[in-house]
Image (cartoon, rainbow, N blue to C red):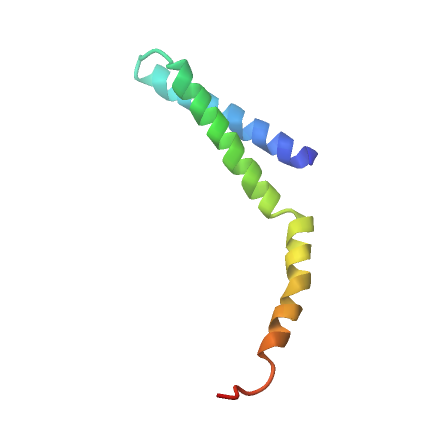
Length: 78
């Protein structure tokens, strides 16, 4: 759980910094609403990716694969 939080916050911070540097390089002001959106969605997407690839989720999925493969044992009868 803490890994998801740390990664999400880190990506959100990096997204904000990249956005701010990009705006400053063009000598434009930061649009705070856009900066918030980039940081929020960057954190949410990265948190989802970390959640989907954690050991618990992968292990649970791998446990269920043999059960699905048992359905396809044998010859078709039609």
